[in-house]
Length: 445
Image (cartoon, rainbow, N blue to C red; front, side, top):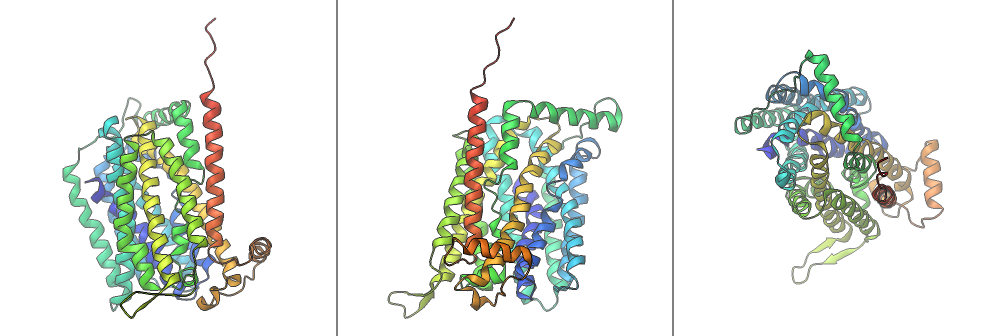
């Protein structure tokens, strides 16, 4: 039920990061401009802790879920109907940001229920099912959205189908516990004060502080996925709509869901924070692997008479491996949070950690888009994608700086950037955790 209920949250994000992103790039928007779509989607995500107490102290989680899902359905319908060009970009960014803000309440309402009803023994398993809805939903939204927008005669039809699928998820509410809002004495003000106090007390503990630090660092973000879905970037690997839809859509949904269950299994056997940090290192290795993989040439399939473009095959294969790692990381993140928050003020506490973790996804996604925009014109395979040489001052500075130590920069350079930042962040977390672990309480008296 958690998987089904969380699908609208993930699907709206996937619709933006895959379907709209690919079509916007194919319609002529630059890589940097197209990255703004995902940036608008994540803009409110790292601020949602500021309105999360509203979910904890007012209406019940069920009522909030129905309200937010309805608004999210209207948002995805509006996105589908807006033309994708430079003139409509500002309006589209506003719609995406507003829909993302309300869509965050979809997640908060489920998190409030989950925090109260999940035992310590079930944290890994619940995290797996929960993130299967988030990431599987994102793959569903991206694949179905891209398919519908390209095959249906009118864009509004695609939006209507997506909106209807969102509303259908509300039927699963009848199968989850009915959790009441957090209302101690003192009314809404007193309840909000109590929620803020709960969060502060949690952060003063060693697990709470380390979990917050782990979330705010660029570890296991999966930020490259949104940039890899862009037509110009995919063209660096000679990949088109079919490869993007396959590796960032339906097939990715199965792979990333498997990663979620793998992450849940690991967190049932090892401490979630250790799993999260280790997966972050693994994702960095995968990013480097994709960056150094060949992009030119053909591979003859023995006995078939057919040849496969090496770059396109590498794009699909490494994307799927990367997606599996993202599934591991997100399940580990949820287990880290459930391990730290306890049962009270679930929506606010979970949203606090989610806001921290969304911040590096937001800024790193924008940075990777800039790096890709600056280096595509320098890469050997980029000319086929029609990428223009960087023109802005920032892009020229990035291009010159990267070109000074990279003999053949291209879209893969952004993957090196993500990998380096991830490794540094894991090292910093290990140092802080080690320092806190050596602390001993002073003797009484």
